[in-house]
Length: 388
Ligand code: PLP
Image 1: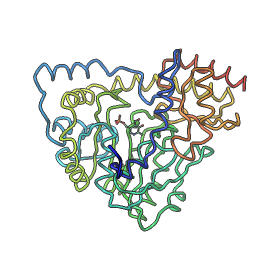
Image 2: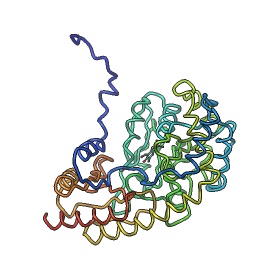
Image 3: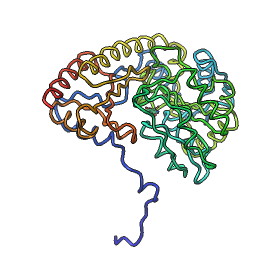
């Protein structure tokens, strides 16, 4: 067929493929690679959760659920949010079960953006945020954070980017890729700006279960923030359920019902069997989460200390399972460092620049790998650095 016109959307054509993929593909084609590249738990989902899913299939629960998800699951989510984060949501009207936090983010953005609205994205950031803003017709506006301040978002930085078109801001704590956690005091300072400029906050708390050093503060628990926050969370990380594709949104009724409208047309509902598994995860899974958390914490302490001993300076990340060390002392760019480390020592990490401009000079290493693998990765990195 001779091409006389372009069939693809301009927005889609302008999207860059995820920089993480390129390294995955390269690493997958090689033997003996230690991958610190993937952002997922190395645990298998708890047996009781898998069993609840199997039981639901045995009982023949294979139809659609309500668009918003099984009421029993929404009730469990509501109890979970109250118990762990001290925030109250009505399971009948303020919670929507989604296909992962990924779909929750997409829905949240599509529900609030009018063409040209600006959405603040804090860098370094999870790779989906800016593309999802663009796909929803908005304009991502980037705020840079600084490694010297452990990548903590500074309220005055937000203020500098605000224009008459600024509609919302995406917050992510614990953060992917930096592991940085914002504490209550820091979130309160941000909330003052949010209120002053009448912003909506999409708070991505997918790593909330994995905060190691201080009690976790959920953004909507800050006074006056619940009314303007769309909370995104899910089962992938804390409950080791990435492949189940299950997340949720909790938000004031006005937002949740707008989100539900899109969800019912775009997706109908999240997978039924996964929802049965999730009910069990919330009812009885917290001791397993606690065990996994202890294990990540041990590995974080070992891995971050070892990176610092190698001369790759790294702040102690308060949450998630990522270390984000500086590689500036090597004189290489992030891409050069990651590519050479993979080719010469078969260790896969993600170059920091794929997470935005302020990630240049850093690499993301996931420590959700066995202790033996982490120790071997450190040995190989040591050899690599000695040769440089
Ligand atoms: N948000 C952040 C910050 C993430 O790191 C990820 C996955 O890596 C997601 C959302 C997506 O999670 P899910 O598997 O629930 O779609």
